[in-house]
Length: 350
Image (cartoon, helix red, strand yellow):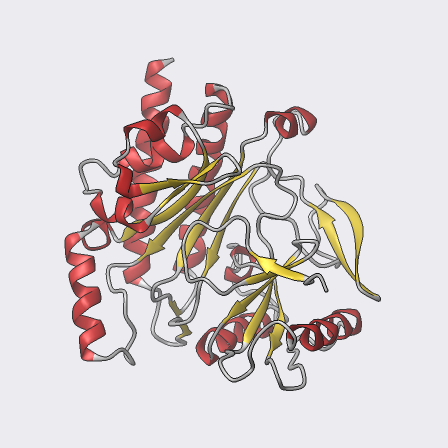
């Protein structure tokens, strides 16, 4: 019998164990209570009227559909959407046959952020100088402190954790221990590469990511400029949010297929489309109904050529009354500076 689920085809970093459905619309990610609570609190807050004009933090996160426990009746958080509830209940039953319940963690069900991309190029950037939460063991605190001190996590507040990119001429300059070629024409850049970068050469990592041979210089510049604008918007979001993002990452994705660029006439959008059918869905999207078994989840075809998302909240929390997260803001500031340098350099070259 053929499985309905498979490992993710496109993943830049992170732990193994996440699955996707046959249509590659959803991700079923092993999680913990902290991450589930984080998603659910932000989801509940979205029901309230926003008290500021900045983009709410939830809009930078992958859409959260609920959580499941293998071997237990499905626990679906967003039960007001009956169609989603029924669909996740179906997945919960099917996943019982895929995962050993004795070893299973709760699964958060998220939108697959690479849906709609033809040839996605993915970069995972871990944020913050402090990489552990208050519950970490002393051994883990010492180990992660050393990682921070010896990498750009400590000096810049972020670190490149991994990439999955189309092969390019720049890859030939890398050390063998820093990458592995995949059979699908991609190259996987591992965490050792990111740990090898220092403050004075970390720009090389971003030039590697954006140096896509299939895209013209103009299209590369357009992608970099879009991410620069997104980072500024995301920075403003963080100033208005009271959260602690420990070991969370920013996920950069851009389209490496020139045909999709042609089809969309090089037109990109700052924010991702809303995944579920709703009132505030982005007008740049075309409605599409995808069947998953006997039920349907209504989604929108992505009209994006690139996107920026915040992911991984196993050690994060909402922290009302404690102000913004300085630990993460410093990393975003550094990223903004780096993207400004890339734009300035490319402008001078041309």
